[in-house]
Figure 1 (cartoon, rainbow, N blue to C red):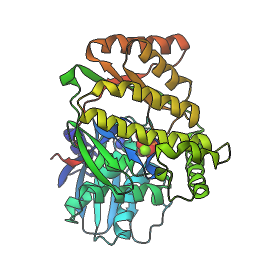
Figure 2: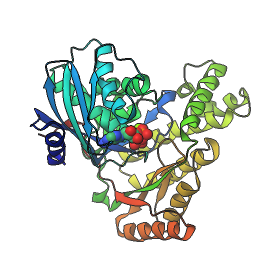
Figure 3: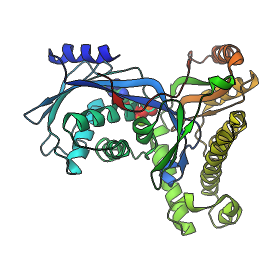
Amino acid sequence: MTTDAAAAFAAAFGDTPDGVWAAPGRINLIGEHTDYNEGYVLPAALPHATRVAARRRPDGVVRLYSAQGDGQVTSVVLDGRAPGSVPGWAAYPAGVFWALAEAGHAVGGADLAFSSDVPTGAGLSSSAALECATAIALDELYGLGLDAPGRALIAQRAENAFVGVPCGALDQMASSCCVEGHAFFLDTRTLIGRQVPLDLPAVGLTLLVVDTRVKHDLGDGAYAGLRAGCERAAELLGVPALRDVAAEELAAAEEKLPADLRPLLRHVVTEDQRVLDTVAALDAGDPRALGPILTAGHASLRDDYRISCPETDLAVATANAAGALGARMMGGGFGGSVLALVDSDRLEAVESAVHAAFAEAGYGAPHTFTATPAQGAHRVG
Ligand code: ADP
Ligand code: MG
């Protein structure tokens, strides 16, 4: 893939890059829709990554090419470019230039060629991988001196303000800050995190990802609506964010909310607790305890947050029936990927059961692969 990015660079710009950087996609063990409620998350980086071959330009011009894009080189003159001015996929990397300039960094032009094996739109954060690869390349090309969380915040700002997606900090913090062999326990309020060792194969366990390859349309509007609902609930409860409602205060807090906001509160408060329980189980050397927590997290997303869909429900139910220790949908909802914790010797049985169930239901074939925690954004060439 390093060579893929360099080859894409040669094809697009007819030359060699100054360097090649990579930023991974991610899974999230638990902690879904908690980031914009200032709560806890527990991602790990995937071996799948977006590589960027990059070279400085002296003239303030940005040229962008992706082997997975539209086949075109997009040229952007940075001066005065407003959010919304760059169409299509190129808005993500262009947004990183914009966010760096907005934050006062002396970033100039560059030629960037991307090559990625992160599935897009699958809840595995291909957008963050694209942004974080751009951020680390520019940081190092221009000697900006950012650290990994600093690059993540620039990337999040690009997605929020330039692309126009109101995402929380989970995806970019994961892609930038994860460490190989670990899950990253992050408090999204303080942005203070801790690397939690995660070597599941050593204890005979495997994380299976089922990319359902479906993305139902209601996803985009629903996300903004859920976010607004959470903000409204926090306002009614008189707290800065739903993260401030403790698990033991949940029942009393629910009483103070209108019926439509109660399930949102319930999901966020119980999900934060599930992150804490998971970290405690991993710290105690009991990774099998993660199984029931995953399945409880799925039920909460399905029944309270109501963002699951028939395909993700089927993947979870089938994996569990075939012997997984637990499973849940990940990401924004209405499709995307499911994460299952399985005994390594049950992996094939679970995978083939999921494929068979999808065929039986008349769904398209899912894409299944195992996830071993990989390294966050770094230079590769
Ligand atoms: P996710 O981040 O879960 O994969 P998003 O909807 O947030 O889903 O981001 C997917 C979008 O990001 C794609 O539609 C595309 O515009 C852009 N994208 C991600 N990776 C690439 C890439 N390597 N090349 C071109 N565009 C990409
Ligand atoms: Mg994304």
